[in-house]
Length: 332
Image (cartoon, rainbow, N blue to C red; front, side, top):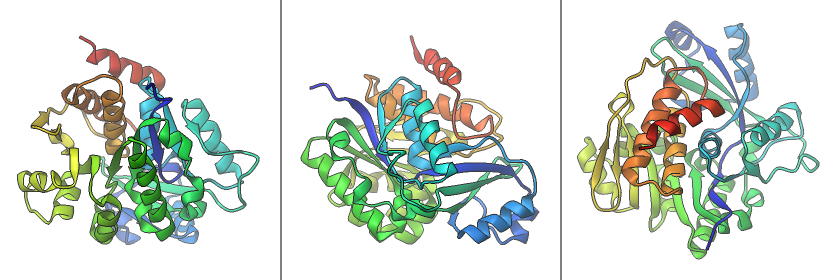
C-alpha cells in the first residue's frame, strides 16, 4: 500500500534567529555553552539587546521541523504537526513551511492568540552552537495538534525529543506513538539534546516504552541515556530499546546499527563554521534515504554529506539547489 507521506514529524515550531557571539559573551551572561536552555521572553530579549547586531535571515525551525524540511528538499513527502500563534512570526512560519514543500496542520484562519516560539542561536568562533529558546505557544503543544490521519498515511512517525519538557507534549508524544504502532507505521525518535536526556531521562523511558524502530542520538546523549562511559557499550544497550539507531559523532562521522550489524559512516572533510542543525540535517537526510529505497549505509553516506555541508555555512538548512547537488553525489 502506497503511503501519502514518507515521514510525519511532531515537534516544536520555532523561528530561528542566529547571531555570532564570543565565549566571553557567554560567560558574562551565564549561558551554558553547547546546550539548549529554555528561557522566558524577557531573558531572550535581554540577550538580543546585549548582542546588538543584525540578525541572520529568519527561518522556521525547531529540531524536527529542520529534519522534516530536509526530507522534503531531498525529494521526499513530509508532514509536520506543530503549534504557532496568531502573530507575525506564526504567519511567517506557515509561509516558510509552504515554501519548503512541507504539509502541516496549521490553519492560518484558526490560529490562537499568543506568541510564536523563538530560538536564539548563538554561534561561537569554534562553530559550536548554543541555543536559548522561548517556547511561547508551542509550550502548549498537545494531542490537539496531532493529525491522526497524516500519521496513519506515513511510512514513519518522527518524534522530537525537545517535546519531553512538558507533560501535555509528552502525552502527545505517547499518543502519536500509539497511533503509529496500531497502524503499522514505524516510529523514530531523536533525543535532540544532552540536556533533555540528562534532566528528562525517566520521561524518555516512558515515551520509548517497549521500544522504537529508529533512534537518533549523538555520542553524549547515547552514553547519558545508557549510563555507559564508552560508545561500544552504549551501542549494545541501545539495542534493547531500538531496532535500529544512529549515533552521530561530529567530525568523526557516525555509527549506524541496521538491525544486524554496526556500520561506520565516514565524515566528509569540511571547515566548520556553524554546527547548528547538523544533527537535524543528518536525521532528515537519513530518514529520506531509508524511506526512498536507499540502504542504511547509503542513507548514512547521504546524511554525512548533507551535515558536512550544513556545518560549513551559517543556518540549519540547505537551499534547494544545494540539496539537489548533495543528492546527485550519492548517485552511482
